[in-house]
Length: 348
View: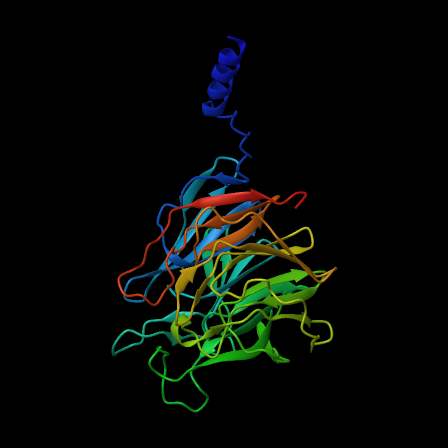
């Protein structure tokens, strides 16, 4: 009888599953979705709010979106559109104003393509107004920009070849990544050329830490992912000396068309895309670079892969907004996400 009872207890215990392990809390907060999902969006924080610019519609039509996100109310507000709708622009903030540089627009005639421009604009969030600035010395799209020492630096990008009669770029036509660096002084509304970046590239990430500027990743060789290669190179620029230093610790995940933000002496890089002869994909990777230690740290991955998304550090959170879940270059496959995710950066 005792043997039978023991056998019954053994069988019962064998079929009853153990208690489920406690599930770790999701480190990503889901916030108010972006009202008009798009790709090729750019984010910047100013005066405690998040601003998103740009957008690209099918047929390579720039949308010129401007939205403001208020973390206090978890709500989006549509603002005045970009004075000149363009895509693949560079954005930076200085003294509460937001600066938008370069980008691409549709060509004046002919089939769809990307025509690089030299336009520069100042957006005043308080007044919701735009002001045209002195144009950049060069025409280029997909550069990156950062503020340091009271000035703004526009770095890299993609454009036509020097001396070429072409006024736009296209995956089927020769074009180039550029290395140029141009400095804008808002006090005098003037530009000057500075030392070029060692690695010509576009679609990169950028961050300023302790008055040094870091350019991270991006693509080399061309502006379109299908005819370019991603790079993992990280380079440091010192505006005070106009010098580029030695290559820093390389990105763990080479990618382009990423989002980024700067917080606590670290530069956070999220998402992006990559293509080769085996795959076409968007990334979920989130990685932080700390210039002081020249080290990279992996963070919890994004809830869904995206490229061409907007990003910025606002308060102690990294915000990631919208973007495309499928790598570009596949006709009819623009899958724009409304997702607005944020992760706490304190202690990471």
